[in-house]
Image (cartoon, rainbow, N blue to C red; front, side, top):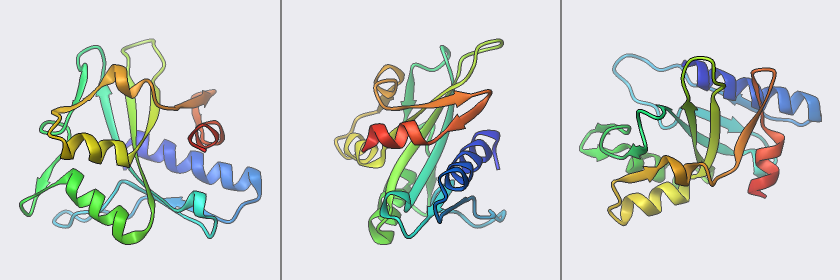
Length: 158
């Protein structure tokens, strides 16, 4: 599990505990020769918290674009965007792409939550990816003492 995945799982679970909500966020154990659908799954009887989240980290300003060819994988003759879209549709989950921007030494990381429908739309219209400047237009995951907070971004997504 990457540091960003762990931080996101912890943020969701902390949110559930603080709000007294039934729900759990987790990362399924990945085995060496098996693939997973998404990095983070969130389960709850509350429909706003039935989620599939793929995580990507980018070093900026080195990267000005999240490329479908470079930052996503191919497996079993299917692109990762196609596999996640299929999983989101079949599972009934709301899908998101969480993008963490690593801004260099001494600068705090920033993360944004992009609805998966936007990623799928860009991919299916043959876009090469999503510019970092566009990613910054989506709701930002706030940080509190180095930990991400979920409530503000979920409110923004409505």
